[in-house]
Amino acid sequence: MDGPADLHAGTRTLGGVLSDDVYDRELRGSLPWGDRRVFKVITGKEDPIEAEPQVKRQIASWFLRFYGTEVDPFGTEVQEVFDLLLQFSGRGPGSSRETHTDIRTAWRLILEIMLCDPRIATY
Image (cartoon, rainbow, N blue to C red; front, side, top):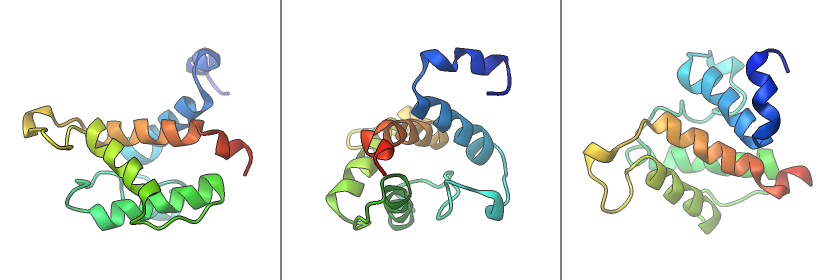
């Protein structure tokens, strides 16, 4: 923990703190590909509908990295996370362009959920 903002980290989940760090470093910034630790398949700035296969491969890679579990990029586990991403970004069924949220914010929420999963502690 480095600074004053970290003093409030005790009231937040570890997943929230980690997802904020990824958001600041990889999604808001322009970290070179070789320095990226989480977004290694996509930049996190793509429209998830237009880049669906790559987005799903990214999510599947996190299952392996975070939980030690290989999953099919087009299987149910990844689809559930992908559907949440669409919902959080306002791109799900029934959404209109006026309700779209910055996709980077939606990714931050997805990462927080995945990083709070108890499976990460048992990997």
